[in-house]
Length: 377
Image (cartoon, rainbow, N blue to C red; front, side):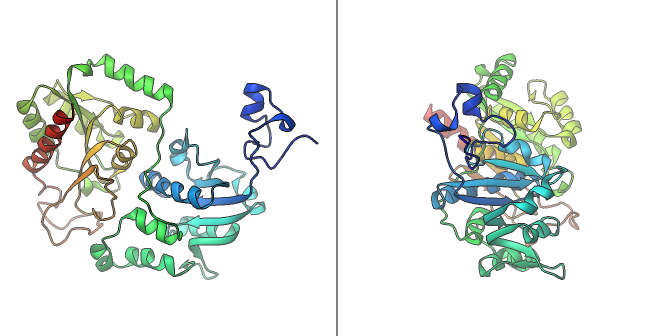
């Protein structure tokens, strides 16, 4: 048999890309790569959390250069991995055949960095020679695999520890996996078609007339409503930017939950460009790439803009600013309040922590970034 079934490029039920595109067969192909070390990463949670967890891939490939990586997630996160050359296979929990497949395959390393009841059972059931992170025990309790995972488990269990933590999520993640942390970037690679689509949007709205494009990501999703900045502050900020310079273009970003507020801001300021609130995930990413400076809360947009290496102003209230790796590009703003990092769905205070972040403070930070942008040009 000339077919090498253990090659990483062979999908099993159809020709590989090298055969399909170039007519190569296994006995005359230089691209053969055997699957010597199989890794599975289990990460089900919010799309933004899945995206920032891709920062782990650099260290994995450095330690295990010939590894084959399977990422097990939800369908909502599947688009993240498009055009990602470090992930060989993406499996979704919703797929009807995934449990059967995972019950057969044995991995060399399993990484499950979440103390999650939903995914913890899979971490226990999937066969692997070594496991890192968290599993379910026989009584249905989440347990750390080893001492490296204890810190993250207790940070999630005790508010006091969460408030005092000074490590970034990325650092903790690497420690859980016993990997060297070298501030690996979040991975998000746009396709050429996506770049062309963003370029067409840029041309359609004549954005070339501006020296700098500032993106305002106005929402934070429905789950964490108190991560949102007050809409009146956005009104003030847009007015300040307009009065400051006509060389700054303003784009609005958001999802379906932000449709009303972004339409309101567009009506108040007709010169502002609304990128839309019903875009696909990949189009959302491509449109973010248009902005030079991105103003956002602690949400998916933050992690996407970070991956796209944008300069960012991030506003923090109920969530931890310390857990966000800034990569030298993120300016963090939070109010002076004792109750920060509460992770509450509802707030007992009025004004809230996010209300106390003034438009003037954000604008002052933006002016410094704009000055640096102009100096660079």
